[in-house]
Image 1: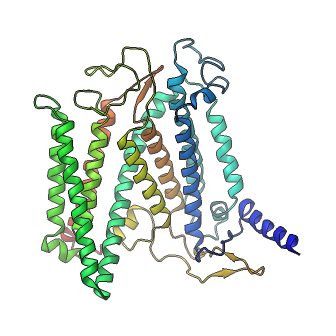
Image 2: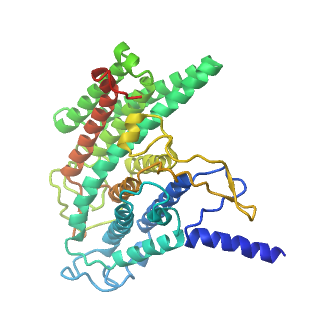
Image 3: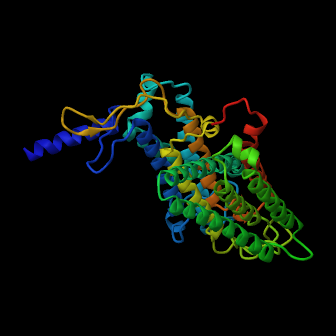
Length: 453
C-alpha cells in the first residue's frame, strides 16, 4: 500500500514537471497562486545559472574549464591567438559570458513566446506555468551550445549588450526598491494606526536614521579614498552632484504639497533611495581605470597603468571578487526574490513593472481528488503580471549578473581592463533613477486631476 501511494505521489510530481498540471504544494507551504509559483521557479532558474557562474570563477576551476575542447589551450587552442593567451586568466571570464548568454537566450525565447498572453486560458499559459523539466533541458542545451561559440568578436559585442542591459536593470532595481519602500512604509503606518503607534513610529524613525547615517558615512569615505586634492575631478563631481540630488529629493518628500498629494511619501523611501544612489556611485568609481583615483581597482593583471587603460605586462592571478560586487549580488538577489512575490498597491509602479494589482480570479485552497494540495490558478480571468515583460526583466538580470561577476571589465586577448564607458553608464543610471523617484513625488502635484494612488 505504501509503495502504491509513493508511486501515485511520484506520478503527480511528474505531471507538474513534465506537463501543464498545477504544481503540488508540500504540507508546510501556505496556499499559493499559480502566478507566484511560476515567477519563483523562473527566478530559481536565474539563481541556478548565477550560482554556476560564481562557481566557474572560483579559484581552481580554471584547470577543469581548460578541458573543454576548443575553449582554451589544453584542449584546442583558440583560432588566431595560439600560444598568446593565459588560460588561467581568461577561462573564468569566458565561462561567465557564455553561461549568462545562455540564460539571456532562454529568457528571450520565453519573452517572445509569451507576447500578449491575456489569461491562463491561452494555450501558451500552459507552457508558462508547466513543463518545468523540459524548460530545464532547454536551458541546459543552450548552455552547452554556448560553450562552443567561436571567440571572434563575441566578447566585444556581448560586452556592449551587457552594458546596455545592465543600465536598464539598474533602473528596474530602483523601481523595485521604491515599491518596497512604499509598501514597507504603508504597512508600518497602518500598524501604527491600529495600535502601539509609538513602537511602529520608533521603528520607522530608526531605519530612516540608519539609512541616512550609512549614506553619510559612505560619502565621507568616498571623499577620503576616491578623491585627491589635485586630481580625480570626475569623482568629486559624481559625489557632490549626487549628494545634492539626494538632499533635494529628501526635502521634497516632506513638503506639505507633496504630502497632501501623496500621503504615502516620506523620508523612509528617500533614505533608501539615497543609500542605493551612494552604492551606484561607489560602483561607478570602482570602474575608473585611473588607479590613483581608484584604490579598489582589481589587479586582474599584475601591473595596471594608472594613466592608460591597457595593461602592459603579462597577466597574473585573477581576482574577480570585490566588496561592491558582493553588495551588488546581494541587492540583485533581494530584488529578484521581491519581483517574484510582490503584490503592490502603487499604481505608478504597477504601470512601470507591467503588473495589475487585484486582477485575476482569487480562489481558495485547491485540493485534488487524491487529497493533495495544489497551486491555485488565479489567472483564468486575466493575468496578474505581463508574462513577456517578466522574462525580459530576467533577461536584463542575466546581463547584469554577467557584468557584475566580471566587474564590468573588458577583455583583450588575455588582458583585462576597466573602461570609462562603464563608469558613465553606472553614474548616468543613478541620475535617471533619482529622476524617476523625483517624478513619483512631483507628478501628483503637477497633475492633481490624475489618479496616482
